[in-house]
Image 1: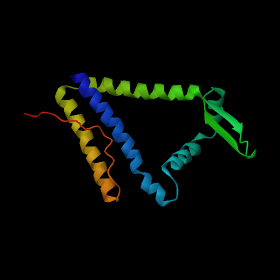
Image 2: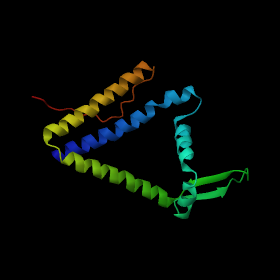
Image 3: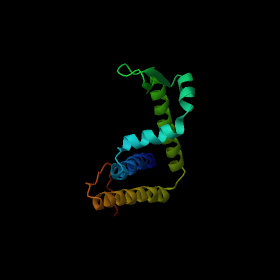
Image 4: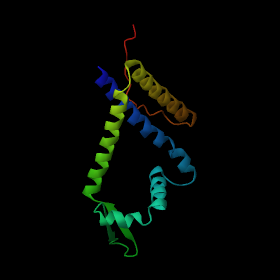
Length: 144
């Protein structure tokens, strides 16, 4: 019972975070970049020497572009993909542990809060002329 409620909240939280990120896409379009390009720009601005370190750790691979030798291509390695998945699992585990410390009423309040935030995201999308993206898992409770 509590386990099911925790899983529902974790699923809804992850879907909400994804939707919030997607919600910034129109703002980036106004300046002529996609959301993915904006993320890359943000990361590269902060990356600098970190790429060298990540190459040394075997998490990134650097090579010349076959079509244009002036370009350097940096790609993730399978080890990096595995590490990112471990980070995601760690975040989920930590969230589950925190949620597990809540009583049933508190857990329901968190679940309802995420639902309210998802509705706000929908209203924002509608106000911006987009179709709301209902990726947040919905649930039905029998409140009798």
